[in-house]
Image 1 (cartoon, protein in one colour):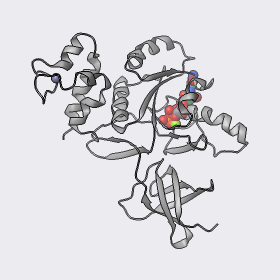
Image 2: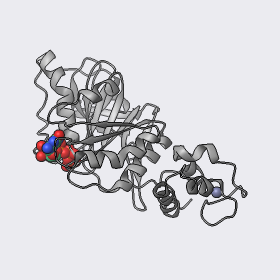
Image 3: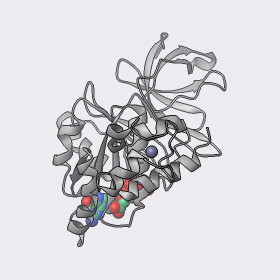
Image 4: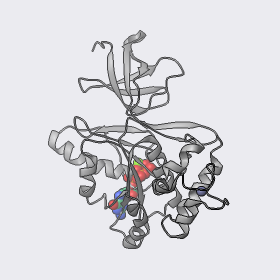
Length: 291
Ligand SMILES: Nc1nc2c(ncn2[C@@H]2O[C@H](COP(=O)(O)OP(=O)(O)OP(=O)(O)O)[C@@H](O)[C@H]2O)c(=O)[nH]1
Ligand SMILES: [Mg+2]
Ligand SMILES: [Zn+2]
């Protein structure tokens, strides 16, 4: 095949090589030109033919959004150009609830819709876990409870025409959800998609799966931590949706919503309008973020 200069979509990210979907639907392994270019799954890229006839990524098109996690040591873009972030937790194994706050904050900052998925509803204790997540639904985030092993029908309308990414700790069922999402498409097209090995192996690389002409979904490896250093301190309070009606109403313009008198956020918290756990997460994240 001769490659003409053109554009492509990053569907697989490995160490220094990327799998790129070309406009004709075929995939090609490409190298990157230069060390500064760090594409992520979902990126639209310009490619050209390099030496050895291999594809070379020469530029990343401007991103419409960028979901990243950043701690004190490194920054990682999980996915580019996504419209929906699906945070996946399960009835088992136990999950870290603070991660959910971190995902909501990162999604808000990235301008993406956040959806909370509770998987493995077939296991005992499911209803209690679901009840514990209701506060997120009260914040306005869709809460979808399902059993991916039995199907993902409740999730389908949220994936249609969207570019989504799954995040969550290992073992929650992200790859199982992807398999279920692809199931129908695979059956319909009869195409044999590359084996996902989902449900049997832990995911090691981020990968984009096409669901339709305008819809795709990205599977990511399990993550125990989710740093939000990419946010500026000044933007953090806006990323807590329920804080927004009260921002600007504190006595001090630079109120940290911690110890200051006449703090509108703390007042809302004592009235039960802001959950104490969310305010506690806010303070923890604020201490974490330096600038
Ligand atoms: N009981 C039950 N088990 C499920 C369900 N969905 C997934 N599992 C199981 O949970 C385990 C982990 O599923 P995966 O899809 O590999 O989880 P993952 O989130 O992709 O994990 P990583 O790739 O390590 O991040 C597997 O043994 C699945 O079979 C479900 O709805 N019910
Ligand atoms: Mg997986
Ligand atoms: Zn305040």
